[in-house]
Length: 95
Image 1 (cartoon, rainbow, N blue to C red):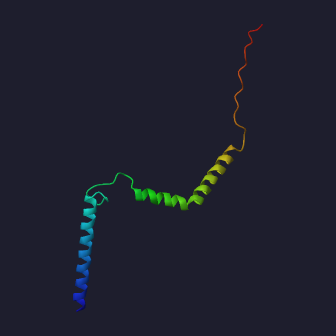
Image 2 (image 1 turned 180 degrees about the vertical axis):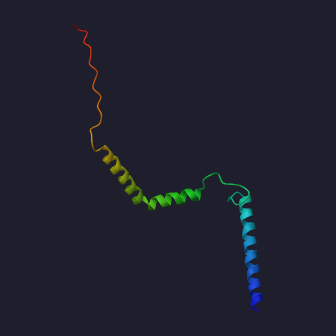
Image 3 (image 1 turned 90 degrees about the horizontal axis):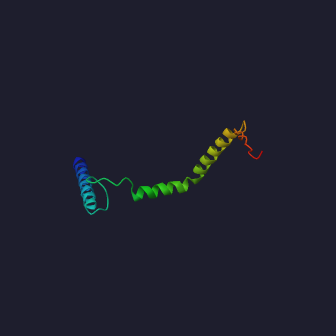
């Protein structure tokens, strides 16, 4: 009896996967998703939305990284003054 129940569960699960596959193919034919036959255009609206959501929650991390980069730039500026070129002597032709 238990073996028959396991076979029925496995069969039902396989039928569910097949129906899900057919639904995905139908949605792709209508142009609503990219599944197997066509590839995306390189970026999707969902991916862009998730990226924006991630950047919204990680603003403190980005700000901290920017501050660290600014500190590194300031440290590299410490030391000898920047090289200044001597101005070329002007020739006075008023004599």
